[in-house]
Image 1: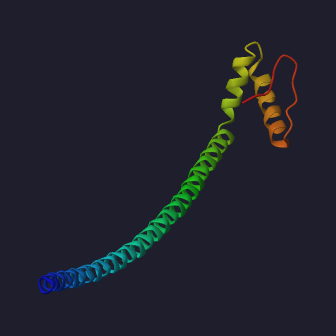
Image 2 (image 1 turned 30 degrees about the vertical axis):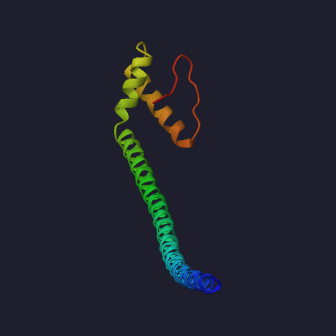
Length: 141
């Protein structure tokens, strides 16, 4: 009986040794899988940080380009407005009859000579930078 029980214990020990060896191998394989997954995650994280940095740089570049385009077109629109205003002023200076017509419509009882003199007076007042009112008639344009 002792011999049989010794045999059973030896078999149990051998079985346990085999199980321990297989568990040790599976733990080693699991450690390798964890190490591989960690390496892969680190690579993916580095790639993600690189993509994130390039996206941020692209956004900054777009904002810079948008700002420069805005400044360019704002200058262009300001220049166009200034040119248009300058052209209007030049047209008004070339056509003094418009001022006379405006004054004549405001003072229908005035004679053509009075309207012309008043137009001349208003023009010289506008050029000097001061407008002076005239009784019953006002300079304007």
